Length: 66
Image (cartoon, rainbow, N blue to C red; front, side, top):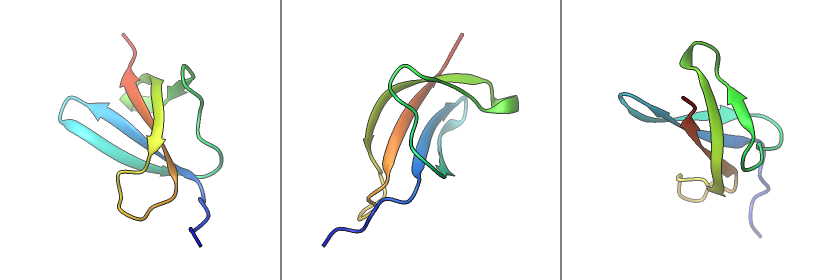
């Protein structure tokens, strides 16, 4: 029986590479905008599986907005 997802991840681009952020609740939808404070404003490019093995949470892949 697969584990239930509890929250989601944000896969965030930074000038130093990518980072993962744990979040509670439902993930944003494709095309949504996410404000990460000092890190800037991002848009959701796609939703996918968590990059962690065996992690059932969805992951929102973000790209920085100009």
